[in-house]
Length: 78
Image (cartoon, rainbow, N blue to C red):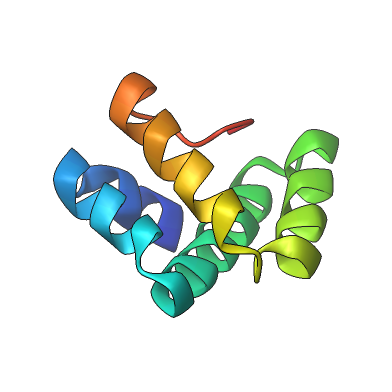
């Protein structure tokens, strides 16, 4: 089982908490995005994984994804 599958099997509240915590959110974002790319092998997944890898140290990205998960039960561009 890859990390994005594990992440999506978690309760929505757990997903939001994992994304809100600053350092944990950074690690979760990187692991989920790269895991999704390795599973999908799509260009969009690769671009999003690269962008998240180099900009995910900015907490606002995790907070936006946390709100998106709360509203739509999915990460942005996933």
